[in-house]
Image 1: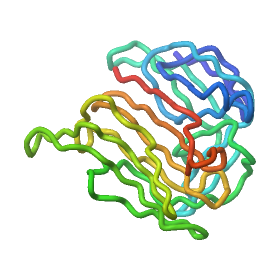
Image 2: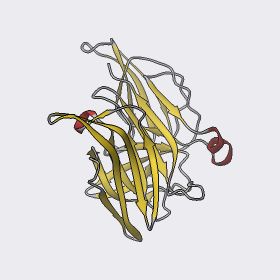
Image 3: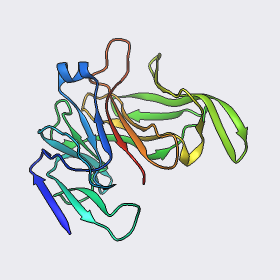
Image 4: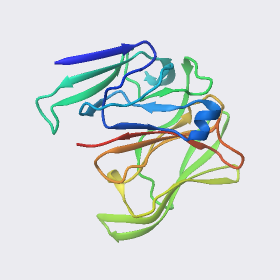
Length: 240
């Protein structure tokens, strides 16, 4: 059994999955709410409240990255396996598969996007990752933390993500308790010029274990004085 809702460029549905859309209230008042979503299956049939507006997908087309207006479809699909009887499927009516979907992105238009990193990378303290953009760089994305545990079961206390550029250094997120290293730990997911201002934007997964995700979007165009980027949206995906 499958139930579908399709809205051209928007979702206006009170249906769906264990995911949350979060954004600072001050940002919502001054710039409009920015939302982050992934086209994938989510466990269960749960409600979320999402306002109308254009959605843009971030696509990799034969090695070239681009933003593209996307019609979003939300289906509730019965599944014979797994820990729940249904999943909520978010998909797009476009060729290809978007890495992320974004709503409320400042000055968003269809067209090319510069991406300098896409994947899933745990950053070990003391091993910064240099990232370049055509008109700016190098940026350094790194982590601080104190090693704990033993080899093969390594953890870090006081772990935090850091971004540096042209003498500026900004802590993006600091964990209050220890984090695991490698695949179970928080990850750098994407870096590039998502909002078209020739400065680096970031998406981190601030998860604390193998199950669940907490994708977090940081944009440069909305950064305040003294900041390189500011957090504008989160997508929390719970595991089964």
